[in-house]
Image (cartoon, rainbow, N blue to C red):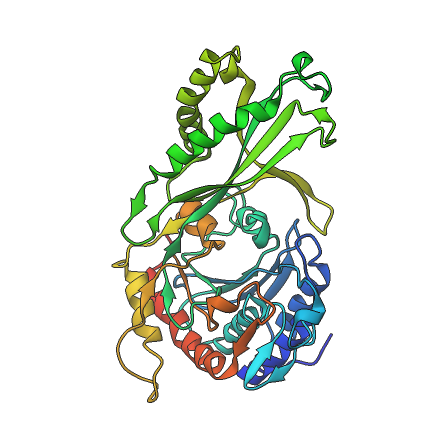
Length: 412
């Protein structure tokens, strides 16, 4: 076992460099998990373990007060062409005052800060700190869904998600659902179209229904409008001399908190009905029965070997800006300025989805987001984390964690 080491900002940066050097695509987080657990052990965590899916969990024991969970995910998106990067994506390079590479701000830099912050707060907080870094966030949040499952999962009093906020306090975001509209026809040789029923002939009616639904999206005062757009059409068989008997129109739907899978599918079916009826009148018998609507699924396999068919649906969430946890967080973080003081933090939603959709949107656990880093660098080949901002964020975390523990007021 490694010698015990004290938590520090400089130690967190060195740890983040190590993490960036370990690729960790969804389902391939094993080596990264082992490195995270090793750091927790070196920092003297009271408990460390991995769950069935391979998520990394550590606990720093406190008093009898509220339990806070710090969370950043283990997986990352692909780096793409390495030659397109200014600095190597897996180099963990520090240059021009920034940490560079895939995961620098999404999310290995903030993850490293959280791991060290929890250790630094030993004996200084009123309750336990759980540090839980799940797998598979980038593909819908299977890891967090499992971590906080109703039967046997973690149930902290408050969650702080380490997705970058550029120093603001984030209180929610829209969710995302991938919907498939599948149209069925009858395949045939392209030389004899009269013997087939071309599934592509269903496409205009389907797209017209999607357009109608897209123009009637609901809005939230904080999160803005839900949005819906068709992002692809696939035909099967794919041979260009065969009339396809199946098409799949894929929709990207940015949804609002409270939207359910069945509710979303019902709205799509209702939007398609009048257009499919017109198609029936134009000579396609039972066109309505030739179309099915479903949420897209994906067979996901954790690096531990566990497999599950998962819906491609990331829930949204929104905290009340007046919630005691939000108010306490905004006061604790403040505004970053030349003198390091003044005011309360800006409170706003994220533009992208996070695991907060599971912790708050589904499980009902008060959840906020805070971390250094600018959203505009996420998933790009210029990804970076400004180290001056990261140092400020590390110091603010030391104030933020006890503040939200007090605000949470004990276990619900």
